[in-house]
Image (cartoon, rainbow, N blue to C red; front, side, top):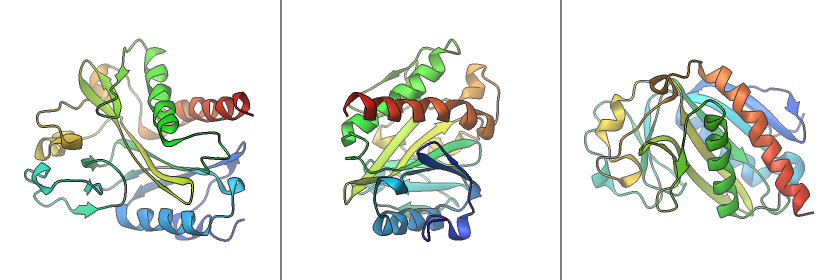
Length: 223
């Protein structure tokens, strides 16, 4: 066991060359601080990991986030964080996937990682008969103009953290309290509203292998 890889957040066995950890339902800030510590302490590509989880209700405001996009947060906490992007919401029923990757070892730049994440969701949806697309001006994945997956990343010492949130079956009301990702009136959707049944765990276990395969494909193609 790597000395910094687990701790209070629990552990899961490695799957392939990237260690995949299921963290369950977590408060936001302890996981964020663990990501920072992991990235500061990691030794190289052997420490690549993906953490997947759900968060208790929270709004997070990216480094360039404008407070005016928080319309009426109410009793949901707001946490300013060190990722890119504006404001978003996390809550139970949303699959959150954090990518702690050595980008150089994975032959990826930040744009390439964003494209890979978006395409993994688009392909997964397409296999289920749902047409989706990405937008260069507003990273994420959209179905008929409504956002179903959001991205926010940070790179430090050549390594990524933060990641992607994928709406599965959740209370979408808190999104009406913000301008999602800084866009007034942006609609948000989720798998359950598109007729795709399943909980966060079943979606994660179905979608993650495709994401891992994409990472391996990029590394092989650029070797």
